[in-house]
Image 1 (cartoon, helix red, strand yellow):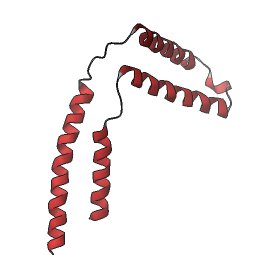
Image 2 (tube, rainbow, N blue to C red; image 1 turned 45 degrees about the vertical axis):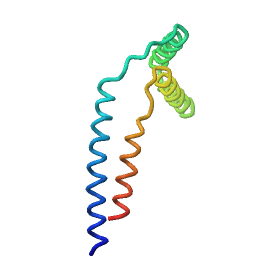
Image 3 (cartoon, rainbow, N blue to C red; image 1 turned 180 degrees about the vertical axis):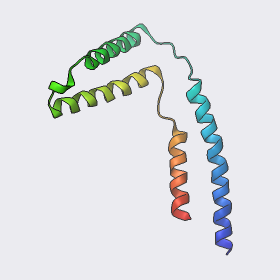
Image 4 (cartoon, rainbow, N blue to C red; image 1 turned 180 degrees about the horizontal axis):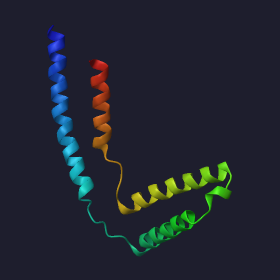
Length: 108
């Protein structure tokens, strides 16, 4: 009985902790800080944008399955690179929330 009470208390503690983490994450997503880019970084972002427009203009119905897969992978890589250049990364609080939820499911 005491173990069950401790688990419930721990669950409430984690629930309160994740709610504040989620709130701070939402604020960070809605108000991203402006990062000043160098001329080289801005040129790379412009090149990535041009390539995305070029890919969107391609008639994908004429491509093979492997070519479509390669284009999709290229777009994902360009997206990661653009986020890295602009200073937007993965928020650790989202991962922490997932871990806490998984732990709660396993414990209860």
